[in-house]
Amino acid sequence: MPPAACHQSRGMTGAAQTLPPSAQDSGGTGPPADPANVAPEGWEELRGASDIQFAPVELPQVREREPSWLDRALETVFEALAAIIRPVALFIAEFWWILALVLAAAVLFFLARIYGPLARGAGTSGGQAAAPGRPDWRPDERESLALLEDADRLALEGRYDEATHLLLKRSVGQIAAARPEWVEPSSTARELAALPALPDAARAAFAVVAERVERSLFALRSLDRSDWEAARAAYAEFALARLGGREAA
Image 1 (cartoon, rainbow, N blue to C red):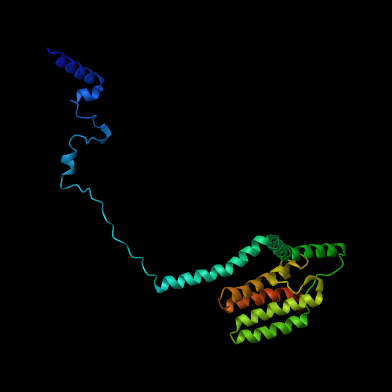
Image 2: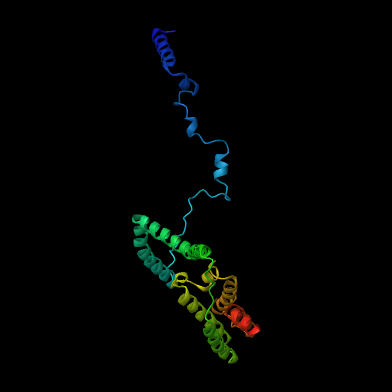
């Protein structure tokens, strides 16, 4: 081999030794491809399938529904309610202790209305027990007869509600005139009927008459003749007991 050719061969061999192994393996055409950028096997076939869509889908724009007249009316009502309730809620949050005092006062008032007459009656009954010579209260006989005549006149006209109410009203007036300490302006017939200071006959009479009057006023049912006769008999048995005893004697 000539010296020049031998020198050229040694140069090519040295250049080949300086190339990276990857270049030597690829035949010297360049660096190998990144596996992350290489499509997997079968990708081109999948990409070319006509029944699979790869293009982005454009969604249609949805128009907002216009509020109806009912929606606008309800919105106006709710806004008005919010404007009214908001100050009330702020007041309650700020002055809740005032509402607590009002609630406590209301509870005490109702308890006094329920148990006050019973306590007064118990005290009066104790006072009467200390003075056994004091006679039981009964309405005046002439007033009782006049009351029954007026009530009978109404009952004969078929006005049983008015006749029964008249018995109750004047009976309460008779008790208030004879025993003012038993009756308060706010006292009801039911409370008077529960007074232990009253004789048993008076309590029974008031219970019968008061029950009929309450039924007439609150049950929205007119009284009939049997209701009137029951109320009249109860009052007469109590108010005219002494008169009947004298007549029998």
